[in-house]
Image (cartoon, rainbow, N blue to C red):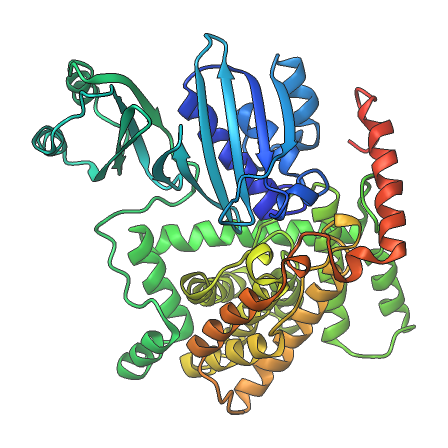
Length: 522
């Protein structure tokens, strides 16, 4: 992806794409509303929700290099976009309320939520509850008032194809919606049979936005760290073997395909580190090119000799600078914490003389720890503070390091547990509402914490609290944090006089740059 935040930028691109598909028309007017009590009201512009939503309406990918200019491009394409702060009692801090009008006059209202790490859900269409996460091919069938399809009809239609994974029926406000989730695009003949129903007023087919689809037939070998630990003891498998076992079950891909997909990510991240160290330019950010200065000082011997740790710091700085210059990064697990995992594993592999295959295995192991966190908590700082982002990334990196050392499943789980314990309660209070400060320092801290936790686990240090219990405690702790300290820009460092001065300076600079057709920072 590109952009400062996965829960803001990447998620909003996907929400925009899905909403455009639901409209099933070329959009000419879009109104996006945010609840003032949520996180988006204060951050939608500075953290890229605005450009992400515009890019989604243009049907762009989250990696599109022109993402910073999507608002201008949308205007050129005849799309009138408006952002409003309107109270509507959203249940989730990352709630988007959207009204779209198409070229033909067709209108639709959508409510969507971002859960962190680019994961999204459309929760209502025209105030009717739905559940669309972009991980299926889906067919929306609108049913006229008073002419709802009977359960028997719905069941009959479902039986006509073997690619339907599930079907749900919702109704309200004078109409109903039948939502079919499918493993493949809907069959033409099946769609024709739906169109012939007197009660059906409209049919819309949705393409998935997620890279790996879901299925009702998925049966994963484990969902928690304790279940993994049991398998590790029983079958004596390695961390990597366990991670591969999970990924193959979850995706239905072959081991070769899973490995190659992760290897592509590793190659991308290695290139991102290289570009970051070479230098980045971008006007709308707080910090300029600093990783090169740090690396130069390291090579000259001007720093306290900390060996690998200083290389890790350089790599973390490089990745954060690539992210802040709208370069290509991987949200692992989020954009705000994108440096901790690769910024730890890549320089460590280089120091140990390991190759890309070794890196790929470690990243798969790290992803397995991410599964446990996703199942038991969240990656969104808006819900649980930065412990959910940099803390999670630190736990994932710790397990990846244990894989490098040939550690056991038990040691990998222990390393992740200690790393998460050490970051418990970490707040999210970005300076000037930019995902740069103190985000850079927290990524570096998470990386160094991962290294320490991995070595402690390899030495046999007892984490005391099992990983599953730590994740639960992290989730509970995050929910206790006040909203002011959960990525709203309303507390902590965000309210310091210096932060407010920087925010105003960047706001003015952004207004000046917005009138330029081709900004110099492109």
